[in-house]
Length: 469
Image (cartoon, rainbow, N blue to C red; front, side):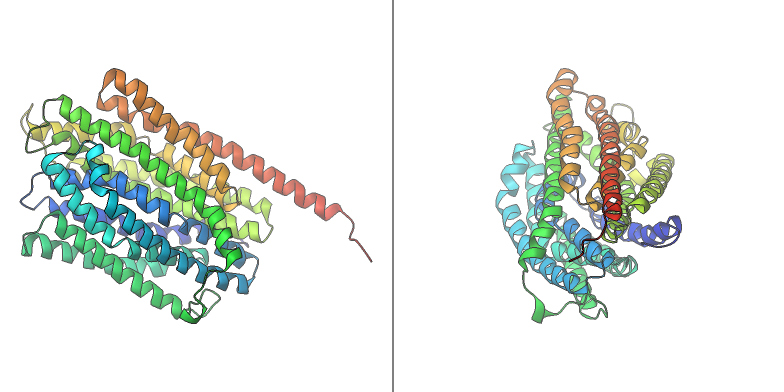
């Protein structure tokens, strides 16, 4: 990562990473696709309403894995193998502790939070059941994410791809077994996801135990080393807080979408079309996000290793290559989702119907979100890479503050003002591209300023004469 041409290496890094990210997204997508075949008409919508809340809890306690990625990569770039080993074992300890805490918190607050979002009746019953079973598996999700971060830090994106491919297949098989074989609904797909994540965690831990380099894991060395802990926390805490607060803004948006549904006089219906249509397209949007986020992860890792090696001029080339690749990936993803929207949405049971019917409203909702959030997705890609470069240079707090002010806070204010005035889906969705372009531009400006300072300091050190005694 610190020598030779960049574009080819970035592509080799992101392709397996992109595939493994897509497979993780497929866990939730498989849940929603298979559960649409169950006897519960609101099953898809119920799972869709849990996403922002689940992500809030998971991001708080698992977001620190981003810190593990940066710190391990930085030590690898500096060739400090002892520090790599200490960081790896500290990170695994953190994954277990934070995973257990996240699981307990999620179980305790699931029902009241989902009710606060506007879920009620059968929708609340199903979403609570799904969420509680999901949170039983959060410790395994935590271990899986930390292990993957460690492997990515050393440039290994193929191993997570292989493991997640196998457990992804297992997840789909279990989904079909529980839903079609045992006639379960949201509880069946949640249980399938928990089991699949448990298998992923065990396999990835075993792989780290067999590693031949400084990232090798041993239970004998399992302890929290103070310096490594605070290094991970310094990078990971802002990332975790950012993810959690973004989820809060998304929870507010989810609540607004339920409000639009209820404003149509559909609150008492057995089928909630606006909720289902939004959930289906949002789930498809997740595939585009994970594809572009792979480039963000590459930006973090490549920047971290070059920063650790003191090669700041090379970071400029990393930025240029990552911006080019992420925008290209986003445009391709947007085009694919737009061209194949109808058949893809039909996999979630959103296939349309006669004009004015509930089924037609669901499809119209999905297309409204498609036009406003998926077609301009290159703006989100632009935002993500800038934040990733800042984190890779050790400016995680700066990245978090910019993201929270430019995206999270703006969306909250938007919902509180513009949406309250119009109460339409369009007035919700337009806040996304506006926040992306604003935040992305500030990220880019901050990255250039920080990089200029690092280069200037390095040149000043090189010009200073050595001190002799």
